[in-house]
Length: 355
Image 1 (cartoon, rainbow, N blue to C red):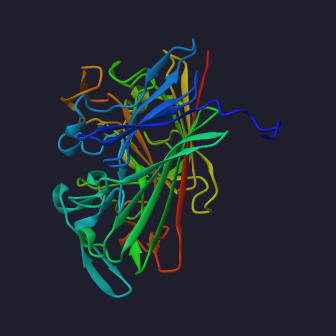
Image 2: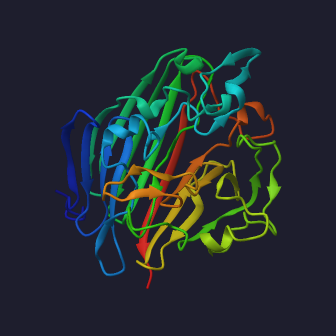
């Protein structure tokens, strides 16, 4: 062994059989982050992070019964695709050929359709190196799946690094031109899941523009400046204070256009901080957009892992992505993947604490 190589101090991924979750994999680093991933939906079910005193808590929302991810808690922590977010009326035209997708929410296609990647059983294998530990997940999506063209092969790695980083890396290849836009849909509460709402958290988003939406949450195609609006989060602001601004929506469910966007390099998108516990999460991504969803529609139907009903604002999703409905918006960054090309995307969640 090379003496310059640090020892394997991470916990090798451990697989547990669970018919409700497919398989459960647990992994992490002692004193740092520990995760639980389910193969049904390639789903981040739990993430334990230390607070400013070194005390760990699970900061990811998930239902007490994993079977609920098929119904009331469908997207919690899941990998969503083929197309994250919305495609208006489930319709798009590619290379002159119109395509109709399965639709659900208000007649639009959301997160890949009625039977998206979040419902599938993914194959998984362990990854363990001196610097990273976690799982690699694979899925084959056949031609015509939910109306999308092309046979698609997708891989997602979910790895924890020794420096308290959780990294998602996505790849995909196809045998026919298609659309790809993948993300993870975890909800975070840095005080701990079930600890109340996140309205006291501070949020900063590195975006000078956002995409306004209509009543169905479909963008109008404009990239509007955030100046003077509730969407100006370029400096950290309590979520409650942001939503108390004049003209603020009832909650966030909007795409932010990151600065800069479209160059494919990993850079900071957002920072979430919980003053009560000192936990801080920095979001870095290669994606051009960030969907911020403050869970304003939660109504207590889902019972969380701690036994607490999840009510409005119980968590916040920070979904790195391409823009909603971009297949119908020629001015937006393209989500088209062609044979011979390789879709790649990477998002890193960097955890730490503040006094």
